[in-house]
Image 1: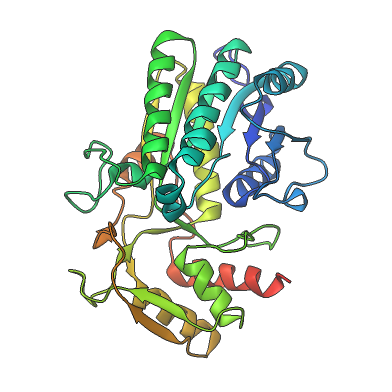
Image 2: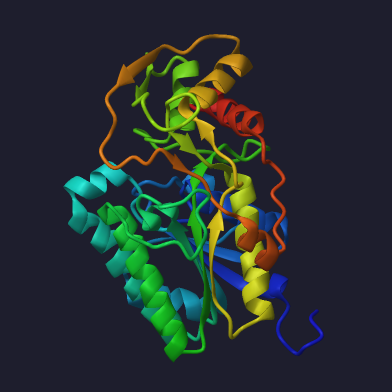
Length: 336
């Protein structure tokens, strides 16, 4: 128990929205492994019921349903929310922006209102490096200009703005974690990226290595990077889940402070380096097809993660490309 009169963090029940999805399910596993009670709400549009352990209470529903969320908060005495629910495919957001403003921004507004009405004190938000748009400098720090270049990034930035305003007006603090490129799978094989039609490179490469795709496209080879292909900061999903637990500790310890933090490793790998790692670990060669650049893709996107490490006391434990790829491959091989 804490010595300052506050409820111990590990006794606080956490509502995990989107907890049947890729990142959310790993956060649920991290909470469960730490002995922290959790409840999941997910509409199962892109999530999977099997991804939530049987001993974790599960509600099928939409986070925009304020009455439902209010009942969950009251019935389970929810003290904190980890909000993962939403739509995440950047190209789709360009052709269907209203879907993203509905599923991400409007739904988050309803969830935040239900949280305030229910007396929830702590809110951890799944944000994104897409809020920065094309950064002016690498690595990207948290005070870099936020100029999204697609509706996905803007929908997340609008939610960050709502949280800041709500935290100034109500007894709620928040931590917005800006993810860079999330990859890998639970090292124990309990969850991984399972959604069909994935757009993330390591998932695509793992599918190709397992014979589920005929090739991998390389979009652009003339970037200002060492080998001409785009460079990204890949973070293992289990390290990211651990960052959420550390964020909860931090919000509990300092209930009047909020944070916006990058989640990455502070170094990047090019598309070719990722594919080379997959080839090396599978002892085979993935077919690569060169395609033109995609509009809006920056040369490099790498996090400055020093603030997250210092603020959260977070220690990345899987900061290794081969580890990330190996876990992704193991998961992919087990998928039907």
